[in-house]
Image (cartoon, rainbow, N blue to C red):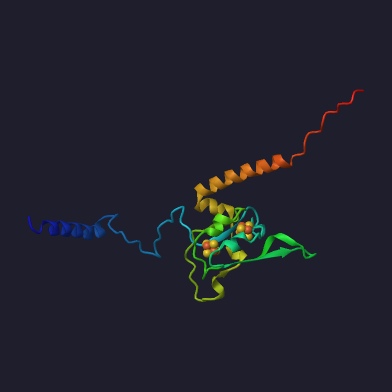
Length: 185
Ligand code: SF4
Ligand code: SF4
């Protein structure tokens, strides 16, 4: 019959309208920022630098690979040096300019040391448009347990791979057993 579709459509609209008052599932809009949906595990926003035990012992060895691969070149790394001026395997400076970062995750994908990962945090708004969004290593650092909490599936896989790698490395550096002497006494 002519107009049935319109009436059906109106019925759905009216039902949904009343559901917003009477049903728990009636409101589809999340009233952010009072309420916030939990992020999906694979959600990624900005990078963080991870450490295992102490914040001053980042996994990063300042190899510069992520900075070279970063498409908009928003990572700045300067290697730390010892008292004799010899470069150390740690960053003295590790800055990321979040006004430029495009959340691509290439730094995470290219780091060979499992040192940089994409975080879930997205509320980074600042009043200052310049320095406030250039994050220094102290502000970028998070414990590995933070990553295990936000991305447990990836963390499990990474932990297993790192444990295997550590076992292989330990086996490779193990001294060979002493050779049995062929000399007859
Ligand atoms: S985060 Fe990874 S790729 Fe980047 S400098 Fe550190 S160790 Fe190298
Ligand atoms: S997420 Fe992409 S743009 Fe941002 S720092 Fe990493 S590589 Fe650079």
